[in-house]
Each structure stands twice: as C-alpha cells, then as structure tokens.
Image 1: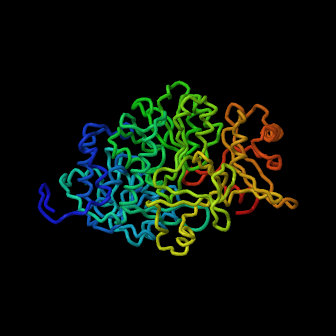
Image 2: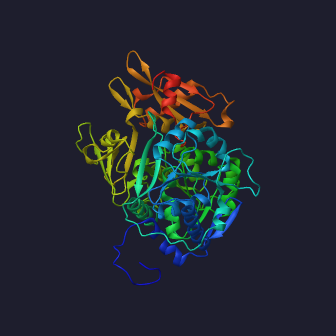
Image 3: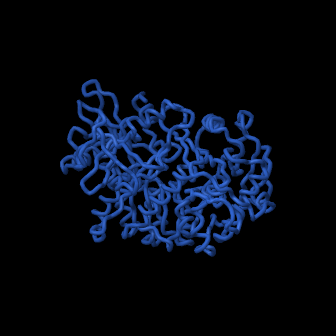
Length: 550
C-alpha cells in the first residue's frame, strides 16, 4: 500500500506491535519520557527516534527474521528497541547480562544473534566472549558519556551518532501478526537457560489484557493516563513484565532509572512524582527500610510485586508508609502476567491489615487467562480455597514452546495446559494463592509443608528483613524445615537468637498460621540470602550450601 493513500489491496488488520503506537501518536505527542538525569524528551521525539532506529538498523543490514540482542539497563534506548526492532520484522533478544559469561555465550549462539546493541558498561563482558560468538556481525554501543569509551573492544557505531545520521521517515512494513517478535532466556534452576519466544499477536493480546487488569478496576491501585510510570524491574526480564508496551500505548509519562542505585531511584520517585512501578519483593523491602523513605510522601506510589511471594511483613510496612501494593503472578513462559491481586470494590475501606492480606494473594486471573488447579493425575480440583494442586494455565499469548527444545516443550504443555510448577489453590472469589513451588515443598513425615508459609510467618517478627525456608534431610522424617533469616540492621546486636525465632514460630502455630509439625528445628541468622539473576531467592544454592542437595 502506498503511504498516505487509499490505493492498494485490502489489508487484513493485524495485531502487531506497530499498532500499539497509534493512539499515543494522536493523543500524547507532548507527553514526557525521562532517562535518569541524562535525557528528557517527548513522545513525538520517541516516535521519530523509533523511525531513526529502524532506518539505522536497516542500514547495518538488519532484515526480517534477524535477531538483535540488547544489553542495557532500564533506559529510553531500551524502550526504543522494544518497538523499532520487532516493527522491522526482526527479533528483539533481551539479554540477561547478570548471567555468567558462559551462559551468555550459550544464549547468544543458541538464539543466533546477528547484531548487538550494548551499554559500554558491558563491553568487558562482551570482549571476554566475542571470539566465541558465531553469528554476530555488527556491534553498536550505548554510552551515557560525551566522551568516546576507553575500550579495546571493537564496535561499529555509537547509538546516538547512528540515530542522528539516520532517516526520520523510515516506513515500517505491514507484518503478519504471527511473526516472531521477541525472545529471551529463562534462568531456571537446572540445566542450561531455555529460550522462549513471542509473536506480535501474543504481545498485543498480553498488553491489552494486562491493561484491563490494572486499569479496569476502580481501586487505589488503578493505572491511568495521569500516572507517572517507572519500572524497577530489568527490561531484559520478560519485557519488564510488559509495562513499557502498556505505558506507551496509553501515553503515560515514563521515567527510566538506568542502573539501579538506591539514591537515584528515590531521587527520581520524588523529582518526577512517580506513581506507578513494579519490582521484586527485595527491592520493595530495600526501599521501605531505607531511612530516606520515611522522609518522603509515598502515598501516591502504587507498586506491583512479582517474581517471588510478597511476605506479609513487607506488605504491612509498605502500606503503613502509604504505598499501595498488589501482587502480580506469572512466569517467563507466560509473557508474563497471569493474575493480579486487585482489591474488589467492597474492600476499599479495609484497614491496612486486611488490605495486606489481599495484597499478598497471588491474585485473580486477568482477562483471557484460564486457570485450573490439577491433582497429580491431571484431574481438576474445586475452587474451595483449600484443595491444593498444581496451577495449570492457558491463554492466547503464552509461549508455544522452548526454542530448539521439543522435549521440554512437550513437558511444559503436557495435556494441553501450561504447567507452572507452582502448587496452590483458588477460592470462591477467584483469588489464586500459591502455597509453594513443587520443587520447594518440604516433605516431612508424609506431610507437605509450604516453605512460603514459613517465610511469611517469620517475616511478621519485627526483626526480620528477609527469610528463606528449605528442607534438610532427616533420618526419621525424611525432611525437616530449616529457616534462614537476615535481620534488620537495627536488630543485629539486639540478642535475636534461634531460640527467639523458634518461640515466634511456635506462637504462629498456636495462632493457626502454620501447623505444629511445620515449626522448623534449625534457624540460621545470615548476613545475606543468595539470589538468582532476576532477584529471586536461590533455593537451589541454599540447598547445596546447607544440605549438599540440589
């Protein structure tokens, strides 16, 4: 079809990422996008920069089906890449730069990445594996400095110079909605990283459904065009949970913090009046215990928590600071959002304790997601708030499988449902509650103990900053629970001992929060708890450290 004409063949409207920009082009041209204290521009500038990036990449030889790998912090450049690369018909590969060099080398070769866009901070990493990358032809660098980077690493262009020389009038092609748009790799806990992938259609459907899930409920957590959005989740991690697509479609002011530095995060929240974010529990915990947080008015800040269960102690602390919190649930394979813990209208006037009980639930399925609870034989269980089983799900945007791995794909989708590996139940109000990961359930004397319930119970002690529960071998019971905790700084010389913690857990059992047989026998007070590359507690490593098991 010719540009600016009605001539040509009929075009069956396709659900492509390009269409997510249509509304904000009409309504949000003067809205702002901010990158740290480095850059501030409008949506009109964004659209031009997306065009220039498409033109520049085409000039480097990128064509339909090629894979472009991005190594960066949360930035405006990443946002531009979220759109320009898939809109060309190429595949956006968001690289988890927290993986080991060997793992990154594996994912780059497995994905057959052709071009790299990379922050200069990661050039030493690239240099260490560059000779082993089999498919890379071009490297473009991102730099926050006006000076040329001091590096021996070879590169072909600098991003801003490349955009300045490119055409602002690049015309993105009309694509089939089933064209592959993005790929990235799950870290998992066993074996090599697994590649998942999503089409344009899947990303658009996920964007629309999550938008309904967070914007269509009249609650304090509602996301609207008057909000100011700042991700505190790496953009390499499942498209930053899809929110850059949602925010851009809505025309919301966006703030990108770059490298996560507590002072910069707090500064941006205050200066730019940030009202909507998402992060893992460890980031929220870091903020709520920060002395700076107590000096700020955070009553307008709404935060979605995902990646791990939100402990009630953290939820209560956040709500007491005026922060509105809710849990989101999903996984890399689901693009990622499956559910969000919206308050129902009658819950608006709940007190903070009641709101925290809702906030820590896994949530209600968003539109177009079918969730069931299945037993070990694949039989669906009642939604009675007590019968547990594996959470199995279906939706039109879930990955069709793992890249080049039909065996694991078949296991993921056995029986026609995506198997999450999470154990939980659903109540009559439609709220899901995860009780544990299948592999993290502690099996003691024929009973199953939820490690998450133990972590939640101990987090209610005032001295606890974070906690992790694992099962350790026991000759009599098979396994027994062990609790590892990190104390808040002000309690580290305050006489908190294993006996104090066990007394607290006994009290929780007496109140019915946990069964008596679940009270841990061992308590370890640690300086820190190891995390995975995406901020989750690394229980595989904990089991190896404390039990010799994996």
